[in-house]
Length: 123
Figure 1 (cartoon, rainbow, N blue to C red):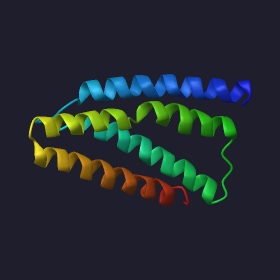
Figure 2 (cartoon, helix red, strand yellow):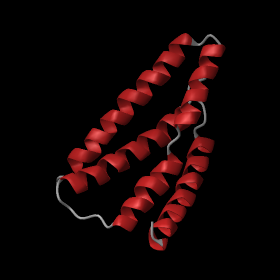
Figure 3 (cartoon, rainbow, N blue to C red):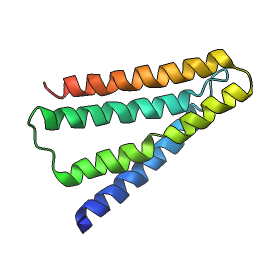
Figure 4 (tube, rainbow, N blue to C red):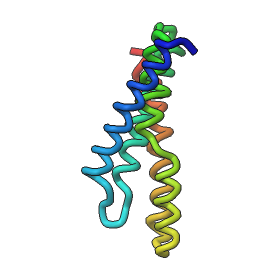
């Protein structure tokens, strides 16, 4: 890894972490449902789908920008561990419907947004 890539990852990671902090702080929980985590995971999934789509459709995305957005920004913005913890907490609190909704929403919405980003990159 060259220095330029490392700096791109570090800067993207710093911005992604700050974005996650503020987005999750604004929308942490709505009626016991972790909306903030779903939102940050959704945003990161769309961005990654878009970047992958650009590459797939033959549009050159420089390596430092891929590192900035993919590994840095989206890596710090999205959070599987918080999603897992929040789901576990819902189960522990016997909120089975909300736990199932959280799992379903995160998987269905984020995978759908990767697909949408991928398709939109073609245009």
